[in-house]
Image (cartoon, rainbow, N blue to C red; front, side, top):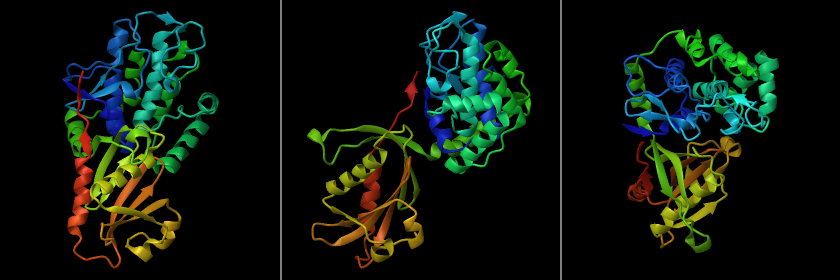
Length: 363
């Protein structure tokens, strides 16, 4: 069976419709009929084991777009433990205190945190103020959900209806008293997971239409300048969204993402024996662009002119720099030769050639 880790990368960039996020939440929780070889938390707990590191990164996607739980390196059959293992942003509060805790109840907490991220694309407990956020959930749940929905709107421009049934389930799963958390069978019988069902055929159709439109690539980001020309291997998502527009996404939260993309683009131009000049002029002065001058002032743009060895200006490139996204636009330059399609095509083809698609893993 072919499995890969594209699931988390997918929903972080493209919001899953509620009916599909619910199906996936159901799949990693427990059995569904007519799906073979699915390993879920219900399977693990039914064998009297605890997973101890439940998180979306450990959820794999098979060739039929079904989910399967992976990474059992921390799994054991002890009902109680005091080892403090797991991933902090999904970890139950009693884990890591040095005291003994109920391992399966800690799994339920981690599963609830994962549910939130699968549904919304955001883990609310991943920031430095995770303790305060958690206390809001415990003491002022209405405030927690209101703040969380406002955060989704501000940071992801996402207006999401979070069902009452989902909120109740999460509040139960993330109870600070482990014994009050539901068992895995009680989670499966919750009203949220039984609101209505989605068929596997529907999810296959949806994922085929959306997941395969974007590809994950591993890029050799050899430094243009640096000690010994040291190479950086970075994985990012790249989408060609138009004839002359590419979008780079920082799926692994690399610290130097913007710099790496800029160096990657410059390296391609240098290899083509073109000269890259950065300009601070407004786009209307040097390039034909659909970006309004007022809009330029509110966006972080790096603008480049591409010239050949004869110093003939060929075309321009705009890099629109955002926190985890860089948009690359290939733009016409005012006063340049009209027949420049070959030059633009070279850059487009070069971008594609430098992309080495990450193969799915046999696990």
